[in-house]
Amino acid sequence: MDSNKNWREDLYVIIFQSDTPAGRRFDSILLLIILASLVIVILDSIDSVHQNYADMLAYIEWGFTIVFAIEYGLRLYCSPKPLRYAFSFYGLVDLLAIVPGILALYYSDAQYLLIIRIIRMLRIFRVLKLSPYLKQANYLMTALRGSKQKIVVFLLSVSTLVTVFGTLMYVIEGPEHGFTSIPKGIYWAIVTLTTVGFGDIVPRTPLGQVVSSLVMITGYSIIAVPTGIFTAELANAMRGEQLQHDCPTCQKNSHEHGAAFCSRCGNALFKKLE
Image 1: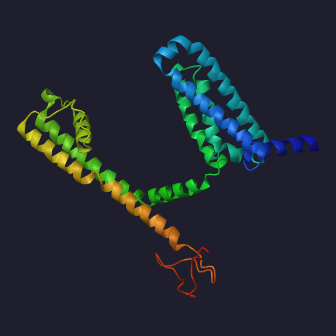
Image 2: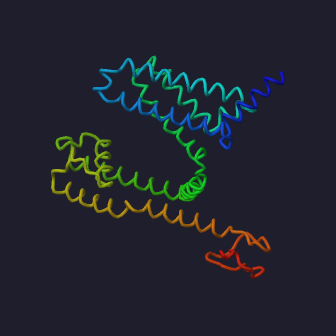
Image 3: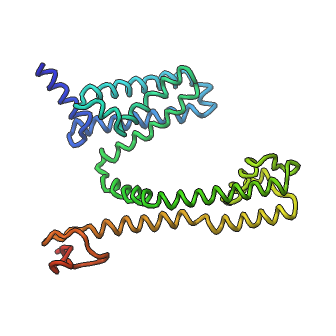
């Protein structure tokens, strides 16, 4: 019983902890296998390669799927809380690395969903000790959360605009000019408002061209709005991090932006480098 427990503990250290030599080797090998699997999926999507090597690539991909399935089973086996791991972010990603390979038995094109394994490359941040980059990513997530309501309002406003413009163009141009329905007009309005301009549907009447010009001008005026909202929230998030710097003397944890001395005790907030 004790030997089985020790085996599980040793396996847990190897699989889940990257701060040991064995754990780093395991994660490094795993990342190489994930990368090789992605290369196989990409090569298989090339028609000439698929026609000549489809069977061989399928066998190799099945080998990768079996390896990932064994790895997932070992993670569940040695984890102190298997359900917690199974429903964690990495647990779900590890499971998704296996599911497309099984689906490919019933639907051949499902094998290309295996490209989702690239998400597993996020483990490289842990293996290579890139946690400072994750901290920078937290700024982005904080900014996204802070700007969520503003962006939702913006998207609702844009949705209203494209619906109005699309309906208006359907009435003005009509089916004879390609605007066969209101959804088709909305599609045209989205393409025009975002300044993409595929050119598959174009207004023919003078009034339609006037409306089209108005839509394009409106698109240029609002296209930078979400960028501005996000940039402002990102600046707030980074400034908020600076404001949370603790005073080394009295431990006060909030200060004005750019402050060099604590407003409570007067001591320097940052130590000078010798």
